[in-house]
Length: 341
Image (cartoon, rainbow, N blue to C red; front, top):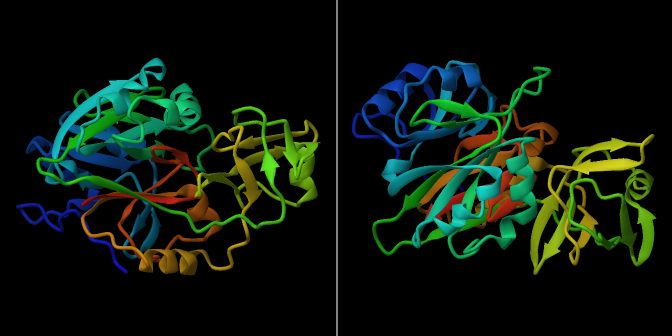
């Protein structure tokens, strides 16, 4: 099923949820549009100051399929077509204010740079922030071109045009009616059902775990299972909701495993069951959902890479491909959609 954009055209006929040339985006900004943007750093650096937030990524899902863009295009979502927008910027010690300052009816759209202190703090603590599940935060972890060694992730406060490597930019989107923000998490992974894994501490690099009640070094278990970085995530059971923590790296010599999202104590984890057809699995998952009023979406870089989605259409709302997805808390290897309903 094809999801709908918040609006197909702006008043002048310009697309408001898709890739656009840099010059056209600059014209929208000068005209006063309030935008969420994603693109390469050189493209975002070329834009004028105005009412926008942004983050770096060269990867996108479009109606035609996954794409890697040049510096001449920017992905645009017209937030002003969705609701009334206010923009804020937060440091690592201020992140609990994001949900606390979000509108009662609407959502907070946050962009966080990958690998930053803000990324780590949000990942570990987002579920404990005031009003975290009453005033939803959605968004994404900005990234970079994996083919460019030494590249960094950035976020932008468009009001000044300033780029930050360790701040969070947020657009608070308030609905002017009785509508609610509904958050859809599309996760094609499910636990395999073979082992139950538990952890004692919250963290991205767990050294120890229990597997079916037996204490083991986590790296030993991962290698014994033949798992590789990026292929199948751990799937945690959060009161019936499946939340992934994906493998970032495995160092056999050091006996360590690094994850893209933290694991938490008190949660049952298992490796995901294999997925034979990424694109087909997404199409099937999307076909069972209604996305009327869809406003914004993102999908994970791990799905893009390991699912071989470049040039492959899966259906669904277009949006950036990210180094992590936000739906109340940090997610991995999922698709996230926010809609007005």
